[in-house]
Image (tube, rainbow, N blue to C red):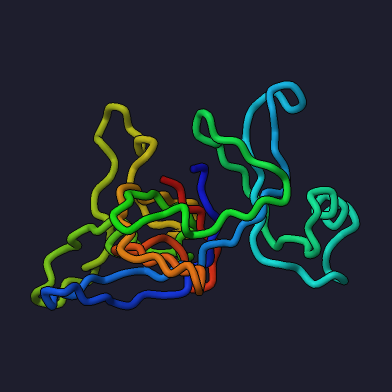
Length: 205
């Protein structure tokens, strides 16, 4: 199975039969219609293009609406993403893929855009310990010495410094699917995933 596009709803917990609590992230995944099937002959590579959500008719551009109409869709998807299908899998334009392709216990990876934290210092951005905290140290949160003396007399590329934190594409692998709710198109994934609430994520096996 190629994957699904979803929307992060938030976090909660699920209780097992033995009473243990499992922290989970709830994702509204699918149904995702197949908008286009790309082949080696026509596009030079094999992939399927999935859609998710629905735009208002007045907000969709004519190319977007025409592309969706070619697949037989009534609404124009809000987001389009490509997935590489597994060997032997076949898909048709207009076909719907739902959360039923996942089962509890499946291992998945989730890709999303992490929350933007703005410009942050080294302690928050990289986890530096900081300077001594006692006796009112005047610069307790500075990065400290960074120039390596006479040679090479410069700051090495890649040095951990203050800067923009978050707002980048992140992928977390080996997350466990704890529960699948086909009626509400919900997927319960153990642990946290990148992104803020109502942000789009990609889920693949």
